[in-house]
Image: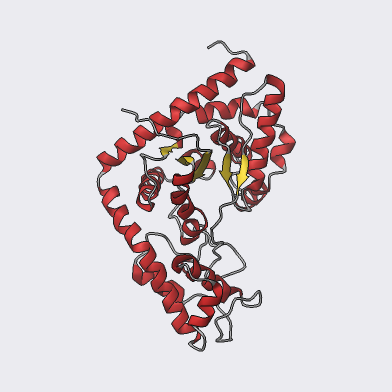
Length: 336
């Protein structure tokens, strides 16, 4: 039975995450940790965006496992199904249905200019499919279905939010007030975590070097080992500086998990060298993630309870999505 969530006039927020592999420390510190806190301030809707995963070829059993895992991990992080709507995207058919409708109000030139299409088509040159080209329209449907006031975005997602806004404004100009035009939300906190092996690049689960990223569910030994191997420089001074990207990245991570300022971190490790600092960062990260890992293992072990939660979330999400979708279809002229 679908329960109503008390919103108390809060602004609506929508965020989605792909189940495209193990989520990283970068995902956690950059976004997911904020998702938990935002539940108190906003009316939040969170989705596992599984439809977006198949723009590249997936092994069915592996994809299925990743969807389960990502949903369970959101709960383990502290996303509360009594406070937020949490669901799996493909369980709400209006996402794909509205995507087709919006595709007819999106120009070819707009899609061809999307930066991520250019990047991904170069990376997957043997599979430049229509889905890869048009997935920003599906992303627009993901957003516009739930009429959010705000959408948290990072630097690499701003272009997708802008195209969603453009589509909404275009549709509204033709048919009246159908979609809410969302604003970008920049969280008050959120660390930009870089690769442990190449601090000029963002930490990514797609990095082929397993020492470059830390998974939220990594063991304590693996976490500490990866930080011990983190690329730094030939100096031994723990100091935040553009000239020291490796150490600056580690300071950012340590600050994010301990709550200490960069200046406090510099004082704490003054004269102690990189070895002691790397070990301390690894231990602090492992301690931060350990409760999440324990909770995840409890949740993923009870598939029946997990299934009940994602089905309830989909039922709740579809009640909202259906209203928006039918309104858009009626405005266009379809018989309902």
